[in-house]
Image (cartoon, rainbow, N blue to C red; front, side, top):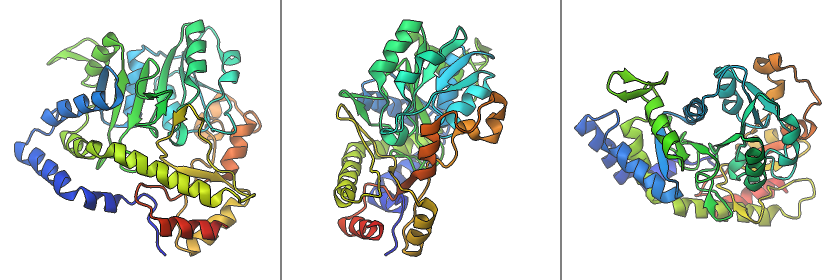
Length: 363
């Protein structure tokens, strides 16, 4: 049996006529930059998330940059985050000349451990960036309480978690600013790069909208040093179609996760994903932990089963962050999980036979 990891082709076929009509409409109107579809998408995103402002942009990475620029993050400022995430989380901090300060993870959720944050706060700390890893929000109440106590801002890296919830609210509604990605393989993906920034702060929203068009307040008048961070109209057209069906896709992702959990629950050598009761996951990945990862991956590959590792090397051990002075052993839980984590095929369209086949090979 040959199984597709993300099954993007199948999804396109499901919505092909609507998506291709949307693409053709943009092409015929020739309004490729900031066209009507952008306005429509931002309204649709606000409705879906409950956030006061949804600002589309060119990628999840640029969403993080825009968020930090809006908060006036400067060189030598410090931002606390997790070392167990995709590099963009910390890369954007470093790009602005600020310093990523890492905190170890909770071993059950793999998100940042809020009990370890306060001791890393200094006079230079300006913000905290929790990551909603694999689709599950972090412990936001605890993090927001710490931020309020120390007068810090909170930027949520929700690149993997669009549509997830924390105590009944989407994670796009939480924090001072929340960011997401519409990279094709994300739970809600476009047909190229794309992202969005969410906030309930009117002034921040105005500034972010300006920053994404080179800091303009009106054409050729620049209040800020900004960037070219707009989402292409053609991507907005795709997202407007896919967003209509996204709640259904999220429910299907949860069903797939539940079926994985049921079929693998008695396997003593596999640690299954753990989602806390007061939140939901978008299940961007279904990631298990095993001791013999490389050998198991090779065996599954021979059986036609693709796997992935998110992520094999924590950020504090990456060569590009050597200047920070971290060493192996500084974040033991993060390092342990990175050696054991393995993602199985996860998409809304995995059927019972495919899940049974995957489970049988693991068992």
